[in-house]
Length: 398
Image (cartoon, rainbow, N blue to C red; front, top):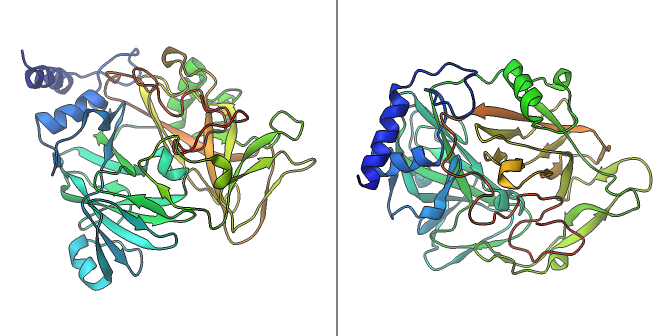
């Protein structure tokens, strides 16, 4: 039996299954997020994921697929959504200022907005939709990146049955970045059906797996709360980093290349009270609690809630199955928080709830977990900058 036949056999098993919610771990469901092996099937068998160049093996993540920039980028006057009556290409005719060839590399300037056609596209079947998000390393560089589709009325949301190209809106906020064809700034998750993700289901998950340490069932409302650590070791130690203004260029494809202190200032625990966020600055902080994503689920950080303060937390909100999970060697992993205040300075207190994690079931456990196989950049992380920077002894970047 060849690889395609194996994928088709596996898919038939899933399509024929009728497993109700609440089944034991490892059960196959008819609704939920697609794991890596199902994404591979969509590429090789059903052709629901299309591509201009062959998909690389390392694009497959446990519950998502990395997307690649195409060979051209358009500098545009303003961000936009095409709306239900227009394609992205139609809008570009009015809004594009300049077309750039990025095949061999080009700079995306801080403060500018670009639209980049991606090498991947979709031809989704009935009951199948998708959502986009920046990759973790993208969010930690403060690169505001969103997925756009033809006739789209929402960013990062791909409607059921969509067939067409995909585009990335890219706006570097802090650092200018060097990108090229094939660079990976965002990722996509694909969902079959409309699985429920109720608070009761998350309360059960918390009881069984302690998905967020030290949180009680009664704290769960519209997701599992996550709070911020601004005390650290309580002795004025480093609790995070603040991006330096007017720092140098960052090549998005270089790993462990740049010196941290050329781009970041350490943030120390305040002597008393909370940490004052300046709206002109971008911060990397960490959650107070360890986060755990069981192999049967994926999670997403809800990025912004006006009820907890005038700031945005976590641009890159996807947490893969296995993140922080003991089976994948991730026990003790904390969520890294990419924080920017809006409009006015804001005092953020130790233990303040800054976001909520929404957990969603997979249709089946992934073929491999986050943290298994190739060593990931952020498993068992504490305060972790993006993978582009050399590790510092004072930062837990294991």
